[in-house]
Image 1 (cartoon, rainbow, N blue to C red):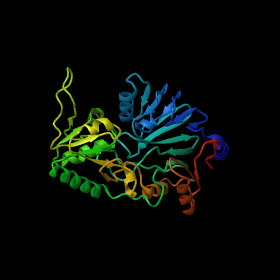
Image 2 (cartoon, rainbow, N blue to C red):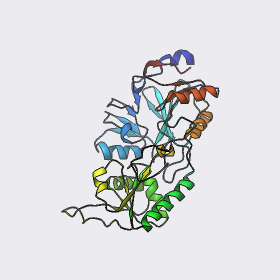
Image 3 (spheres, rainbow, N blue to C red):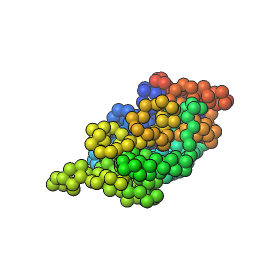
Image 4 (cartoon, one colour):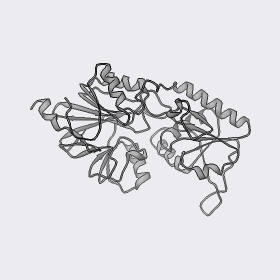
Length: 334
């Protein structure tokens, strides 16, 4: 059977990505019988009948959705035969345990990136990019306007800002997602000698990182009131406080606070960040990294997701066969 005839109905987007021949879903947004989960951010996890993920991702999924969830823990670079397909995971560089998924069938390969980043992180495995015949990739920052400063520059700016706030007698409150960005900030600040207090939801993920060999530094856990199972309110003066951005009511209870929003979107001037200050600290690839990934994968065709059609046009202008992946019944790889 030729590649063309084999892959005429290789996968579809309905709107979730599904391998047709095996009914395997890739990061589906609703519960499925069998799903490959690239990482454990809230918009990528569900209570599936069975999931495949790295050990770190599996640990975070079970921490968030329930310890009884059934799944297969698959380490990087250990191929797994799954319903007629060979599945192999490679580090994606997005958060600890995040994975790109290589899918092989009858000598043809498809790489699904999930969310990824090629630049080095303070707490995450370096991304590993494998060549493939076809590529499905995210394009969150798929415009030339999105080019992030280096981690070293961002780290220096973060230290300076936190130190200035502490020097004024205020409390720096860093708004960072509980998984990934919070651990990077904890690691960076503690290694530079700062006292760090974290929200309990971040402390739980910190513990998972530690259990999997990543030291995020000594962090105190923020408790707000005395009770049978809690100590009295944590003293926050003199500390950098790291919290998820969505707990508005709790953040407002912190006296003399100055908030720092950590989001790639703040790179664009005037973008509403929800903080007194903002730094473009992102765990996604910027435009140059998106282009670099395609050049390194060397695919015959690229399908672009999670952004706009503009990045697909950028790729076509550079000589790649590329298409923005909307909801479609069937997708040909070649």
